[in-house]
Image 1 (cartoon, rainbow, N blue to C red):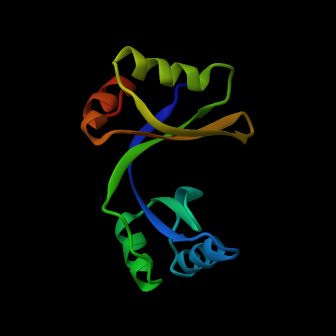
Image 2: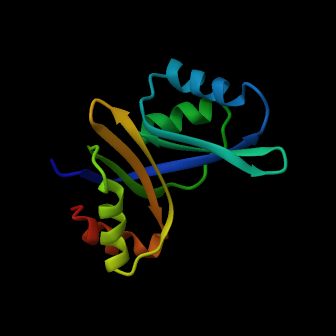
Image 3: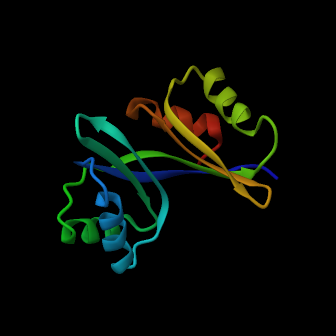
Length: 138
């Protein structure tokens, strides 16, 4: 089975790096009925963390985020990858981008169980169109 790769919108916020901050934000999004396709959090600076959100419905997410008092980044784009877990699956995706001369800004991939894997991948904005073509995304 081939990968399903799609271009997605994402947003990030910078928040205090303290216990419960991620849980508070995710609970507010849950209460608003927001479904996230992907979520990532990591340290950003001294006592700050960056939370990245890839929402299923960007408009509903933005509304819920405003209600929760979050200051969202401008809308950005990346890629969501889902496919059959096998040796070299991510290497194949990365190889397509390398062949096209595209530098990957960041990638996170994980085994999803039941023989599946998922990944989120970012390239610089000027490379989005070229990356879409290299990955076969319409």
